[in-house]
Image (cartoon, rainbow, N blue to C red):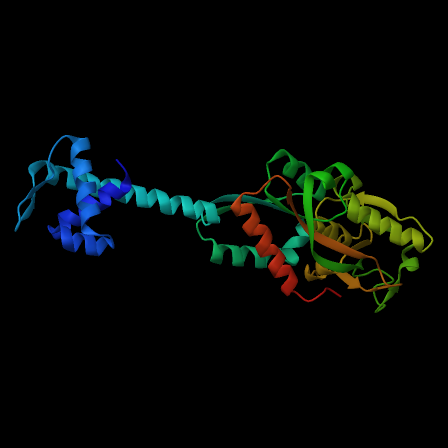
Length: 302
């Protein structure tokens, strides 16, 4: 018994006329009659009483009709559910992000994804770049917003796409002697205590900051470490040192912190979206595509 047999039976049961049922189904009447007889033979009971002028359901046909309707309804529900999962319209996806992404692309991603895929459960985890790479490879994250470059092993296992770029700026305590200047030469920060994130949790950004300072002739004197950008800025505001941060961090406005552009022109730091090469699930692909589209629509960061 196939689903088409149920559809043919229900069409005849509704019209109680083989000709009109065949017309509604878009097939010829003889094949329809043959299929109904084959169904009756398989069931071992007649489903219709037939005469030259009359077609009626038998008692067996009436009983079969209700279950046939349920079976077709269940089959249609299963078909729609499979299509929704196959398109990524339902399911779940885990997204990791570095703290500074909350100041740039992440809010847009969340709004657009919720609008477009309201039935997909989105789990969010704030993690450092190193933690995201580890979680992605382990299958505990599906997509990550992180700061490249990655370690070689991570880069080989993950597909990484740039989704944003911005320059470094200086963050100073509001009462710092250099805070009154509109622009700073990075060499002016030589000898200052620095607040930076630990290298092992975000080597890409950490190394870019150190490389930029070394090109200016000094190595930052790191006296305090903090993991998240919000914590770094808070420690700067508390007078524990200065820092170099992505320009988007200046949106974390505090009365005790000032942000200043740097000379010479600073290195560009990137935000990237990453997923496992082996992850072809529609929910992951949809989230990556949406992130890519939003990134392409943004103006390049200054």
